[in-house]
Length: 304
Image 1: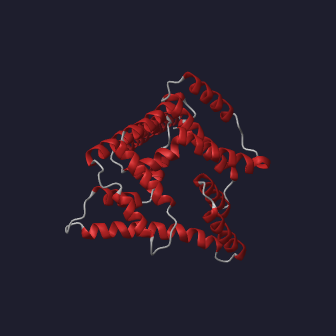
Image 2 (image 1 turned 60 degrees about the vertical axis):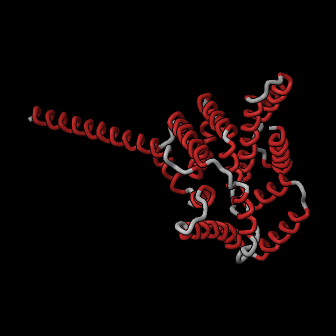
């Protein structure tokens, strides 16, 4: 009888171990499929995935090397830089519905000479770099898939309008692409309106902020006020905003260090990086800290 029990126990253990190995192998296969799929993604999804994992990559030397490679690839490919700038333009566009396409069409005119081959080659390179970053950072497959699936398809529509010249054959596709962009901009506005719909104080606040923004000339100030407002309306922790601005500054500093041969300038940047790296979020000094970070970010961008 004991022999039978032992045999049953042994068989159970063997079965469990077999199931574990099969599950691991299937998961590894799925994970590799996801990594390979990154190389086929559009620029918008690659950008979103990179931004989602950049905090994790900053924690390791390999991750930082990959981030440098990512920034360098964009910097050296003028077509990628132009499209990234246009993405930012779309993300921040905040004009009335009647005039928005005047702005968008003017922006598209600046991209008429995009080299399609150079752009696609750059996107492929960025896909490989981000895939390497994901693998190095041991990010879970579910996290990767969530990042990819959560990216708005507005960027694919933007890419289509940039890369495909208008013809009689692609009229429908161009109209659909413009509808997707319209929907994105409408919903972006609706998010703010819905959060304030039953709150007179918030409505008045937004009106006051918009009035203040129209009188401000410094673009970094406008951007900061918008970010703080949306952060508060979304009930997000100010620490998140602080860390985002801090990390943006650190990345720009890294890029300046890597692309500057002047010893004196490098020394200043290393010193600044060291001070900024140890700076922690403080709720009591948040207002002053975030203003200083936003101004620093703007100054560093200019130097870069």
